[in-house]
Image (cartoon, rainbow, N blue to C red; front, top):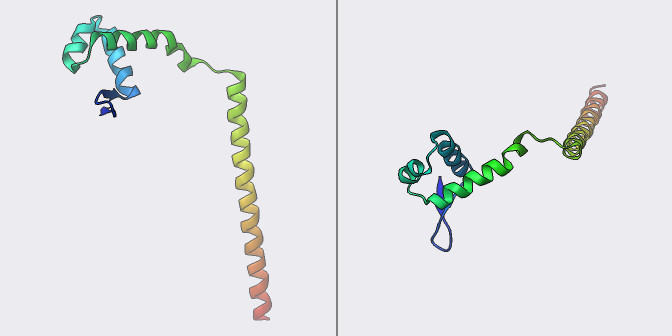
Length: 103
């Protein structure tokens, strides 16, 4: 939920802030949340403003971001393919070696 920073202040997780901001919006009253969680009304107001200003970014996809994700997937698949090729060659070599030992 929260941790204490080096300065002795409580540091709240992003999830906690998000949940409290949503709760304040749903209830329509910051002070209910303030009293329930012992946090300041300024904090709740700030978190709500951040939610309203940046909430749309959850649904935003940019071509650059999408392209980057696809390139990362391709790179991972190429690495996996390379590893499998090495494994296959090792198995072939061991098989040939043991077959030559048996004959």
